[in-house]
Length: 112
Length: 118
Image (cartoon, rainbow over all chains, first blue to last red; front, side):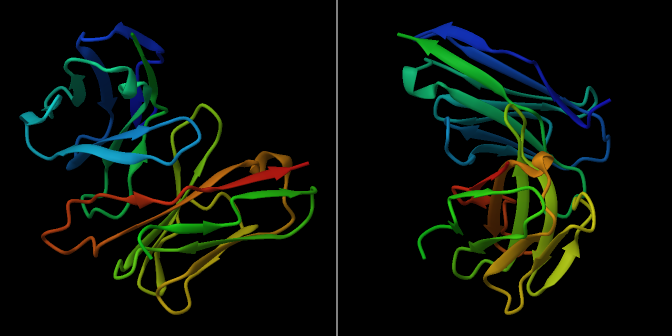
């Protein structure tokens, strides 16, 4: 089992819809969870981080963490064409902020 | 500099050759990371420096790969006897000291060095 798994995608949603991106992880001791966005040909950039169970909201983005189920998700409300990118789930399994394990990413396409 | 700078942006080499990839982190960032990203995959951890020392090199695939950070700033990733399977984008990232309580853990990535081994 891979350490960090994401739905293979791609995911296509119409403009204005909610996009739901899911990620599961295998190491129960993982402490920190991150969502990075990567535009084609560009480097990853951080969108959200979450440490505690529950929801964390930042603008149109909500990260959800459930440590019991080893599940972290990202919701994008009012999706825009500019949200079209690959979204990478990353987990710090060391607990020391020293090494992230990434999923393979899911490509989101927002249709105008 | 304003961001993480990586050179070269593109490198084409022949199988068996030696390559060096350079990373200049954000000023003041003590932590530096090298990742490798193959097409359609997420970044794969290679090595992490805290200051001048390699704190975790568990991701280096074999002894053909080596990285240094002699003065705690610029880092060089060195690949000997390159193989076609080494072809990928090599990403460098930096961050504040991971043990700093205010550090969110965010990694700031450079634009990467695309390596193609023919």
